[in-house]
Length: 394
Image (cartoon, rainbow, N blue to C red; front, side, top):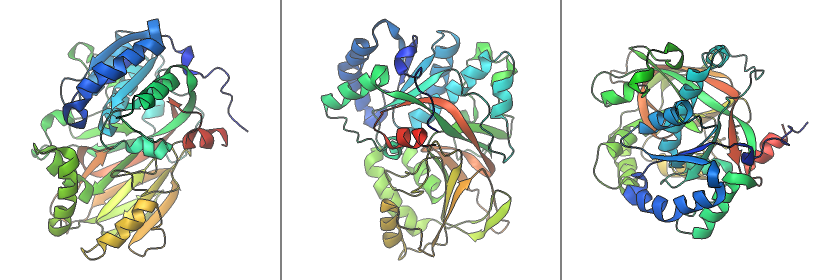
């Protein structure tokens, strides 16, 4: 039975806040936003557009989204940036909703760590959307949306969709509880929840402890070689687009595949050397590779891809297959579909820490536990998108 979307047009939301990352696309997003995006937002949203907030530093999207919800009473948040911006804004949206949650029901749902996959709870009250002006835009590849940031017509059409032409689906999000890093490999600021100081007396919106972090993501999370690549890219002054390709090749020469233990819904599926494990809410990863080709953000479950002990000579062919989602029968890859919970840890023979990332942002390290949060976010998508079709056919 198709969900009833008669009242779920984005035009129903009357207080719209936008968080944009001016440093996206090597700093080009600042000019793009002011010259192209902002006039279109003002044109299509009119008086509904409450505020546009630029991020000031890394991870600042969390603070911006939190303040738009708590201080400006926005009922619709748009993230303008790349996948990393989406991740940060989503976490601010979640924590802002928790702050305003009077009966504690939202917190109880988001702290759920069972594998029941129950979708009986209501989605968060604030709607969410993403305007892609970043580099990777893997979430939009999951949605099946062709992004062309050099085309004014693309932005005109897409922002009209966000304002009134799209529809709201109830999307799942991934929840990961991980181990914080205090060694200096990750900047210490990443361990912060980025809730403004004046609101930290309210413990309901805070999910972290000193050693454990909790984050939410829309598209994918992975651990293994991907985080080694991202750490090298994020700590360099070279253009991310160029350096990502350089580091992907270089790490295949230098990275030592770790030994890990992975449990899927209580069953051990990997206990040994693995180059990469990707826990997908969506299907795309690493610039459009279809690593979990059957994943959907409305399936109420994860799909998981385990890449085993790849060697340099294995890499070109299997990554060619992953690009097109045809690696399911390759013995060097294992796919597990419609999974509710994943537990992962490194084995004793691996000395170095194994780090994990969410939507391109390295946040912490193993051990970690993943839980699906079904139908958690009211997410605005084009009517002709793959995920809208998936939602309508549930």
